[in-house]
Image (cartoon, rainbow, N blue to C red):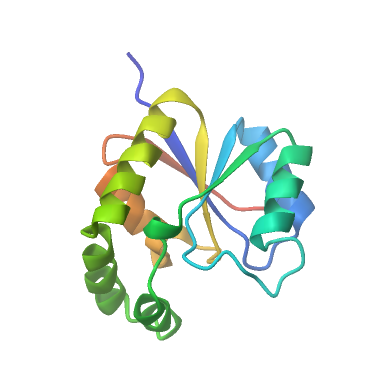
Length: 148
């Protein structure tokens, strides 16, 4: 039996067409938005527009608010304080709503090709890597980088 895959993607410095193209080329079926606040100053990346763009690309969209980073974690990420981000996000994942959302995400990823979406271009500096390690530890990871 082959190992299940999980994809991740960040939209920093990317366009919506580039993100959708990378997802389609990878065979992603579900875009899992793991931002606490699914808002963006970048056109097309706020929740409603992103969901519509994904649907147009033939990709389902699901928002997992409880798996997002709380405000203090986002501030740590902006400071490049990865140790603080890890500590804060670990606490987030212990909340009952995050445990339930993590189980839902894991179940979905067992059935379909899922990509975790957040802002940061590089997965190693983003909570989506921490999430993947905690909730989907046995999955093979493919970090996508959209090309504009």
